[in-house]
Length: 88
Image (cartoon, rainbow, N blue to C red; front, side, top):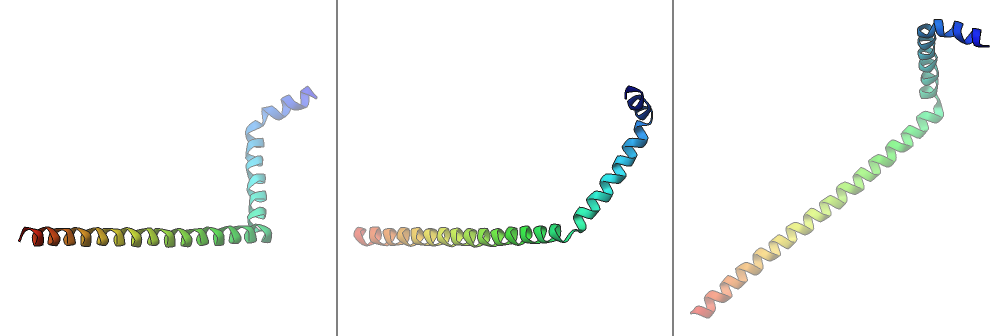
């Protein structure tokens, strides 16, 4: 057994090369499989749905912040008007 192992190790670069080819062939078969395509399609659909929900949430936060800023600006204007009216 040790002799067989030693003989294989003499050609380790060739074995690494063959292993790379085998990995490429198996990887190609996996990527071309219908199950893999369906899983990737479903995953992408979920990612796009989450992205859409995140964009909607961000827009809601932005709208609320703008409303708060406008309310604060109006309150400040009213306070200035009230202060000016009190001075007269």
